[in-house]
Amino acid sequence: MPLIARPQSGRQQLIVAVDTADPAAARQLCTRLAPEAGLLKLGLEFFVANGPAAIRAVAGEAPVFLDLKFHDIPNTVAGAVRSACAAVRPAMLTVHASGGAPMIRAAREAAEAAGGDRPAVLAVTVLTSLDAATLSETGVAGGPAQQVLRLARIALDAGADGLVCSPHEVSRLRDAFGEAPMLVVPGVRPRGAAAGDQARTATPAEAIAAGADWIVMGRPITGHADPVAAARAAVAEMPR
Image (cartoon, rainbow, N blue to C red; front, side, top):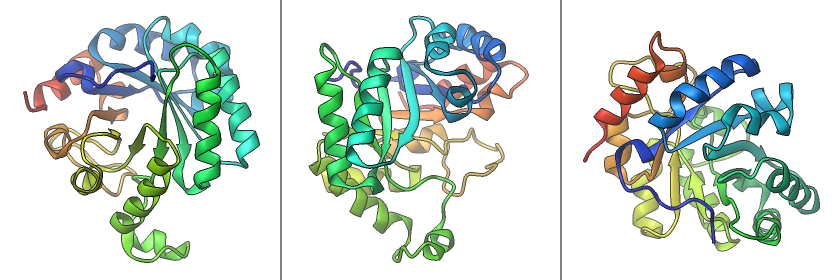
C-alpha cells in the first residue's frame, strides 16, 4: 500500500514546493516549513543541481513529494522509480500520464517491488501552465479538461494511485472517478496573489471545496517575507 495516507484536513493537505537549486536555502525552508505542511515537494531544479542524496539531507524525516515527472520508455521509468525508492524514500512521486499505460504500469510495479510501504505513484495529466491554445499547438484538440479526463482514465486503469491536475479539473475528475484517486492540485494561489506562469489557477478554498486531497503551493509561500505566516494563511483559507 502507499506510504502516504489521504489527509484529513488543514495543514496535512498543504504541500509546499521548495523550488530552489541552493541546498542551504532549501534546508532552511524545509526546516521552517515542515511543521506547517503535510509534505515537502522537491523537484527538477533541486534534483538536477544536487542529486538524490541531497533530498533527504534537506528534508530530514519530513515526507517528500518527489516531483520529477518521469516520462520515458517503460524500462527506463521502472529503473528510475527503483532508484528513487532506494535513494530518496519518497511518499509520492510523479510520472507523466502521456507516457501511456505500459509506462505507468511499469512505474507502479517498480514501486511495489521496492518492498515495504511504497510511494504513491501520481500521474501528471496536463501541466497547469498549459491552456487550450498551447495544447492546440501541440496537436491536442478539445482543450485541457477533455485531455485531463482522457489521460486520467488511461493512468488510473494502468495502476496510478492518483492524479496531478489543475484546480479547474478537480470536480470533473471526482464526478468521473469518485473518491478513489488521490488528487494533488498545483496552480493554487492565495486570494489576490499573482498567477505567475500558471494558466489554470484557484484559491486554496476553491481547490479543496472542489475535491482536492492536497494542494501544492510554492512561490506564494517560499518567496514570502515570512514563509511560515504565508503557509499558515494558506491553511486558514481552506474549508474546515
